[in-house]
Image (cartoon, rainbow, N blue to C red):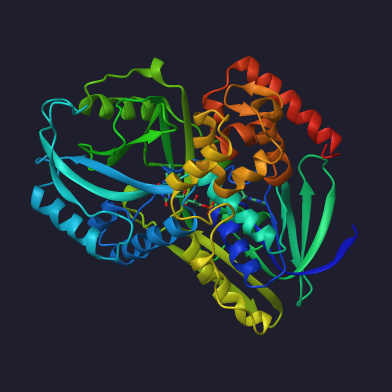
Length: 502
Ligand SMILES: Cc1cc2nc3c(=O)[nH]c(=O)nc-3n(C[C@H](O)[C@H](O)[C@H](O)COP(=O)(O)OP(=O)(O)OC[C@H]3O[C@@H](n4cnc5c(N)ncnc54)[C@H](O)[C@@H]3O)c2cc1C
């Protein structure tokens, strides 16, 4: 097999949030970066999270103060850099004195408010649930506090775009099948998962950011024993028509000491999750079990007046947390922090591996990862990402941006414009370039999905099938009917054939 001429500084294996974040950090410091992902960007854990940029109130019970502080700090950084895909969310915590006493929650919330400085997020307070509460009348009081919501899969794609803007090559649907070295450089064999063709790329350093596959990659591609162990913990969510009209989320306490979120989702839905179940199989095969569906429905029905059943579920998804194995007894107690393992010796080029992590702390993880390997590249810039808006995120107030775009495109239905602002921010203008009326937007696959957006996503966001677009670049999968999906699939396929992608 021919080996590419180009010598990369860094090859990142894995296009989840950690791989994409590391690629963005490294490329913005001037390194030559290639990222490969065997499937779609964010196709594994990083699109199946609860989508919270949160300190993790519950981790305080496990004395994870350092992790909570780090995560709380990141909420403010991400709100600055990605105001389109991330926003503050208020949470109601109904009080159940037999599960956690009020004094304990008050102390927890005090710490949550004060462990890190807050600029954009309001503090916590005690609340009485009035007659308009969607909760059962039994729940009379509780607490209210702030955290952040993020579109997890778009966060990954925007980090990949950030890396690309800074010169990185991004290769979704390229699986690393072998990695060997000659003592100086890595030679990484990539298999194009669509054309089945092979390509060999070389670099000075490799990062293993394969998430739940981090150990498998060591064994199968590097022919090495993994230096650490991870514990796979499955979590599932269900999506139902919205349970209430409030903008707040709910955090529900369960008898088993776990907590479950009920989150406002895509205007018309509620997202309910998550479970915590040890998982043994292939992370790619993960799916929700009946017992998890029953568990989530039960806890929702215990709290809300509006009762749901399995028939109300419009969508569900599951993911596997690749947690560092700290030998905790139960899955929910395993640490959510991360470790970076660097292997370098005189006879081997550096190999950095990521174990664990959270969406919330991905930027800090990426900064620490690149700091750890910076010495191998001579003089490189310090981390740039702290004050570097993600693509489309160079504005401060979504409401003002929405109003500005409304005046620029008065003919565009509000529901589409709102979704564009929340997905693409300032880049909405790039999608709408040249459009002066709705007729200029091309084919209407559905009243909210037009050809200009589909073309943009194929051209600029590495969409390689309709599912990438329906579930990860957008959540329009919740809105299109079966016929519309078939039509979209045909269009995307033809477009990619024309581009000789297939
Ligand atoms: C149910 C659930 C809820 C969660 N909720 C939250 C939350 O609310 N907030 C939060 O901060 N965190 C949350 N998390 C944690 C967070 O989602 C994960 O920590 C994070 O997504 C892990 O990212 P990753 O990049 O390490 O892994 P992944 O996203 O899984 O990415 C790894 C990638 O590597 C690719 N890959 C594997 N092998 C190869 C190969 N040989 N070649 C090329 N590519 C390869 C895979 O296809 C995959 O896309 C949650 C996790 C779960 C499961």
